[in-house]
Length: 259
Image (tube, rainbow, N blue to C red; front, side, top):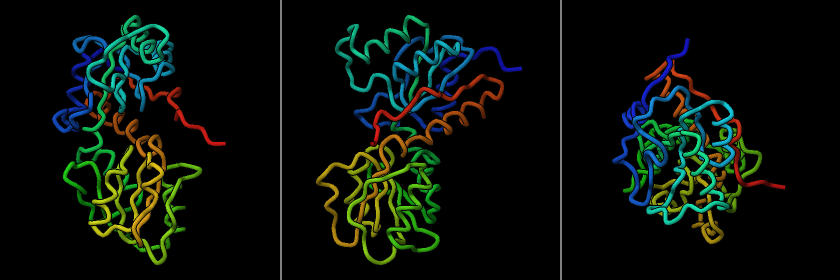
């Protein structure tokens, strides 16, 4: 039998033991964004994004808490909530439905064992260390060097994506790899300085595909680089509250389509 209810703040405290809010970037808005942290909740829905479809799903499945990676309200302050705007409609539906929303964004990226360490693990990197002063990224070594074309196929398999965007493939072998979850193109300079041949990340803009000789970027997309957040959050909550009802969103999809 599932545990009946816990307080929303207890769920948050479990997550913050793993990924303290103090780790978040200055621009971030992790934490509670909607609802009542003191509310007794009986069922949580976990998603990457708190989209309108995800809130509707929570309502349909009787969830009174949503836990996400990306915050519902990203920018501080939120200047208006007006009907007809998709974010506003999402906020209003959550409030009207008595749903409390909590997010762990950049803390989950930076935390030891968090998203960037998971990215490194999926690629089988060893000797992993923090890359850059901001603590977002990681760098490590492949167990066995491989050609860049083979490495691209390895990345696609590791992150479950049918296609990726890359800069020009480099000659020789890839042995040292940097990773940065989400939109991590800002880590390119640090990756080059650290001697990596590749940076795996998302949201790379046009001009950043012009790479130094012997270096390349692989863009798996923001969504695919951060999908592991869902299972990570589930694991954190279930470890602390094994009888609490936790559901993984089926409505949370990448907003980007390829044809």
